[in-house]
Length: 190
Image (cartoon, rainbow, N blue to C red; front, side, top):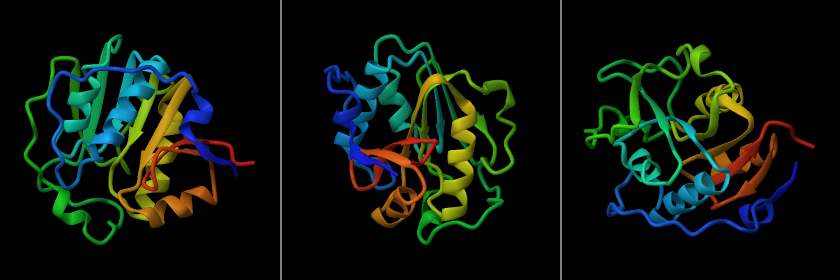
């Protein structure tokens, strides 16, 4: 497995401006992690994005402001549906969160990532952002789905919520760290 900083993979990350104010809300990535994700989207460049785990919609709202993005799909567990796999401690508090009004280029999909049919989106996404449930079972499930979703030149970015799950991911995949909780993940470990 390779561990490196994201700047090693993309030394010329573009500067971008996000017109909407980002706010720090428990359950969202840190503001600077969201900005790093937007910079990756601009640098790839991403035209189609798939997010696993909408939460309140803040991340896709920020991504929608990146120039060149044409479509974003975001998947979240339907209100009051029990998850199919175990959740990590504390994940329950993020279920059924009120959603921000989503920009027109964002399509809200409802379903459990453990049972969702990703077929229509297979190999079509230039950026896949995984920030669903944080249990090992969901992280493995969602990463497997992300590698199916990403286009041949696509990128998978994982946000694990805390440092421990990221340490476990480091043992299985090649990663480029963005933070202790967020990384670009490659499907092939060395």
